[in-house]
Length: 168
Image (cartoon, rainbow, N blue to C red; front, side, top):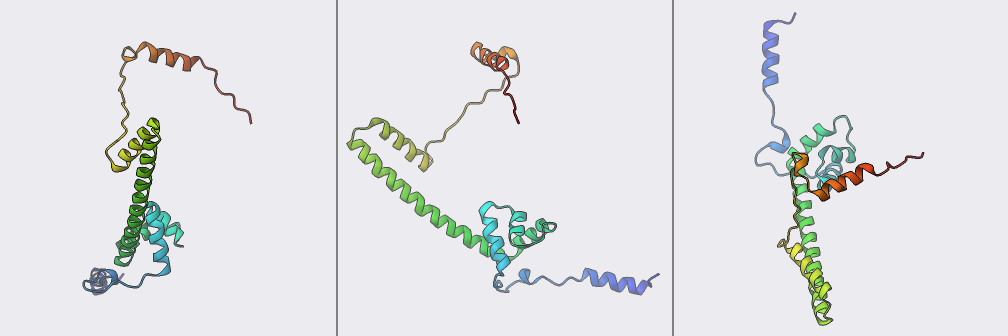
Protein backbone atom coordinates (compact mmCIF):
# COMPACT_ATOMS: atom_id res chain seq x y z
CA UNK A 1 0.00 0.00 0.00
CA UNK A 2 1.48 3.41 -0.96
CA UNK A 3 2.39 5.77 1.79
CA UNK A 4 0.34 8.85 2.48
CA UNK A 5 3.22 11.15 1.49
CA UNK A 6 3.56 9.38 -1.87
CA UNK A 7 -0.16 9.85 -2.57
CA UNK A 8 -0.01 13.53 -1.64
CA UNK A 9 2.97 14.11 -3.96
CA UNK A 10 1.31 12.24 -6.80
CA UNK A 11 -1.94 14.19 -6.38
CA UNK A 12 -0.07 17.50 -6.29
CA UNK A 13 1.77 16.55 -9.48
CA UNK A 14 -1.49 15.67 -11.23
CA UNK A 15 -3.09 18.97 -10.26
CA UNK A 16 -0.13 21.00 -11.48
CA UNK A 17 -0.60 21.05 -15.24
CA UNK A 18 1.62 22.95 -17.59
CA UNK A 19 -0.15 25.10 -20.20
CA UNK A 20 -0.07 23.63 -23.66
CA UNK A 21 2.02 25.56 -26.20
CA UNK A 22 -0.97 26.66 -28.33
CA UNK A 23 -2.71 28.21 -25.33
CA UNK A 24 0.15 30.20 -23.88
CA UNK A 25 -0.70 33.90 -23.94
CA UNK A 26 1.44 36.10 -26.13
CA UNK A 27 3.08 33.20 -27.97
CA UNK A 28 2.96 33.42 -31.78
CA UNK A 29 1.17 30.69 -33.69
CA UNK A 30 3.35 27.79 -34.71
CA UNK A 31 4.14 26.82 -38.28
CA UNK A 32 1.40 24.38 -39.33
CA UNK A 33 2.30 20.76 -39.98
CA UNK A 34 1.26 18.92 -43.13
CA UNK A 35 -1.41 17.05 -41.18
CA UNK A 36 -2.81 20.33 -39.85
CA UNK A 37 -2.96 21.74 -43.37
CA UNK A 38 -4.78 18.66 -44.68
CA UNK A 39 -7.11 18.70 -41.66
CA UNK A 40 -7.99 22.38 -42.20
CA UNK A 41 -8.62 21.91 -45.92
CA UNK A 42 -10.84 18.88 -45.33
CA UNK A 43 -12.64 20.53 -42.41
CA UNK A 44 -13.54 23.58 -44.51
CA UNK A 45 -15.04 21.33 -47.19
CA UNK A 46 -17.85 19.96 -44.97
CA UNK A 47 -17.16 21.02 -41.34
CA UNK A 48 -16.95 17.39 -40.20
CA UNK A 49 -14.01 17.29 -37.79
CA UNK A 50 -13.79 13.52 -37.37
CA UNK A 51 -13.79 12.93 -41.13
CA UNK A 52 -11.18 15.65 -41.60
CA UNK A 53 -8.96 14.04 -38.94
CA UNK A 54 -9.19 10.66 -40.69
CA UNK A 55 -8.35 12.32 -44.03
CA UNK A 56 -5.31 13.92 -42.39
CA UNK A 57 -4.05 10.47 -41.46
CA UNK A 58 -5.17 10.16 -37.86
CA UNK A 59 -6.64 6.98 -36.39
CA UNK A 60 -10.36 6.40 -36.93
CA UNK A 61 -10.68 5.36 -33.31
CA UNK A 62 -9.45 8.74 -32.01
CA UNK A 63 -10.63 10.94 -34.87
CA UNK A 64 -13.36 12.83 -32.97
CA UNK A 65 -11.12 13.56 -29.97
CA UNK A 66 -8.22 14.64 -32.19
CA UNK A 67 -10.52 16.86 -34.25
CA UNK A 68 -11.64 18.61 -31.08
CA UNK A 69 -8.02 19.14 -30.04
CA UNK A 70 -7.03 20.37 -33.50
CA UNK A 71 -9.94 22.85 -33.57
CA UNK A 72 -8.73 24.26 -30.24
CA UNK A 73 -5.28 24.94 -31.69
CA UNK A 74 -4.59 28.55 -32.68
CA UNK A 75 -2.57 27.30 -35.65
CA UNK A 76 -5.48 25.27 -37.04
CA UNK A 77 -7.99 28.03 -36.26
CA UNK A 78 -5.86 30.47 -38.28
CA UNK A 79 -5.62 27.98 -41.17
CA UNK A 80 -9.39 27.46 -41.19
CA UNK A 81 -10.08 31.20 -41.07
CA UNK A 82 -7.64 31.84 -43.92
CA UNK A 83 -9.24 29.11 -46.04
CA UNK A 84 -12.74 30.46 -45.34
CA UNK A 85 -11.64 34.00 -46.24
CA UNK A 86 -10.12 32.71 -49.47
CA UNK A 87 -13.31 30.80 -50.31
CA UNK A 88 -15.41 33.90 -49.59
CA UNK A 89 -13.33 35.93 -52.06
CA UNK A 90 -13.68 33.24 -54.73
CA UNK A 91 -17.44 33.01 -54.22
CA UNK A 92 -17.82 36.79 -54.38
CA UNK A 93 -16.01 36.90 -57.72
CA UNK A 94 -18.15 34.08 -59.08
CA UNK A 95 -21.34 35.70 -57.84
CA UNK A 96 -20.36 39.03 -59.41
CA UNK A 97 -19.60 37.27 -62.70
CA UNK A 98 -22.96 35.45 -62.67
CA UNK A 99 -24.85 38.65 -61.94
CA UNK A 100 -23.12 40.52 -64.78
CA UNK A 101 -23.80 37.65 -67.20
CA UNK A 102 -27.45 37.49 -66.14
CA UNK A 103 -27.79 41.26 -66.66
CA UNK A 104 -26.22 40.98 -70.13
CA UNK A 105 -28.61 38.18 -71.02
CA UNK A 106 -31.52 40.23 -69.67
CA UNK A 107 -30.60 43.17 -71.93
CA UNK A 108 -30.34 40.84 -74.95
CA UNK A 109 -33.69 39.22 -74.13
CA UNK A 110 -35.33 42.65 -73.87
CA UNK A 111 -33.94 43.64 -77.28
CA UNK A 112 -35.23 40.36 -78.77
CA UNK A 113 -38.57 40.94 -77.04
CA UNK A 114 -38.42 37.46 -75.53
CA UNK A 115 -40.84 37.95 -72.65
CA UNK A 116 -40.43 34.50 -71.12
CA UNK A 117 -36.63 34.86 -71.06
CA UNK A 118 -36.94 38.32 -69.49
CA UNK A 119 -39.28 36.96 -66.84
CA UNK A 120 -36.95 34.03 -66.07
CA UNK A 121 -33.86 36.26 -65.85
CA UNK A 122 -35.61 38.75 -63.58
CA UNK A 123 -36.63 35.86 -61.33
CA UNK A 124 -33.03 34.55 -61.35
CA UNK A 125 -31.61 37.97 -60.43
CA UNK A 126 -34.19 38.35 -57.66
CA UNK A 127 -33.19 34.97 -56.21
CA UNK A 128 -29.48 35.80 -56.45
CA UNK A 129 -29.99 39.10 -54.62
CA UNK A 130 -32.08 37.44 -51.91
CA UNK A 131 -35.23 39.38 -52.81
CA UNK A 132 -37.14 36.27 -53.85
CA UNK A 133 -37.50 33.30 -51.57
CA UNK A 134 -39.50 30.30 -52.67
CA UNK A 135 -41.97 29.15 -50.06
CA UNK A 136 -44.05 26.04 -49.94
CA UNK A 137 -47.26 25.81 -48.04
CA UNK A 138 -47.47 22.95 -45.59
CA UNK A 139 -50.84 22.10 -44.16
CA UNK A 140 -51.30 20.00 -41.04
CA UNK A 141 -54.02 17.40 -41.42
CA UNK A 142 -55.36 15.99 -38.17
CA UNK A 143 -58.40 14.14 -39.46
CA UNK A 144 -59.73 12.62 -42.68
CA UNK A 145 -62.43 15.27 -42.68
CA UNK A 146 -59.75 17.92 -43.27
CA UNK A 147 -58.96 16.47 -46.71
CA UNK A 148 -60.59 17.81 -49.87
CA UNK A 149 -62.35 15.53 -52.37
CA UNK A 150 -59.39 15.83 -54.79
CA UNK A 151 -56.92 14.84 -52.06
CA UNK A 152 -59.05 11.86 -51.07
CA UNK A 153 -59.27 10.77 -54.72
CA UNK A 154 -55.50 11.06 -55.10
CA UNK A 155 -54.95 8.93 -52.00
CA UNK A 156 -57.43 6.34 -53.24
CA UNK A 157 -55.64 6.19 -56.59
CA UNK A 158 -52.31 5.69 -54.84
CA UNK A 159 -53.76 2.93 -52.69
CA UNK A 160 -55.23 1.04 -55.67
CA UNK A 161 -52.10 1.31 -57.83
CA UNK A 162 -50.22 -1.97 -58.22
CA UNK A 163 -47.09 -2.28 -56.12
CA UNK A 164 -43.84 -2.27 -58.06
CA UNK A 165 -42.50 -5.76 -58.53
CA UNK A 166 -39.00 -6.43 -57.44
CA UNK A 167 -37.05 -8.74 -59.71
CA UNK A 168 -33.55 -9.65 -58.77
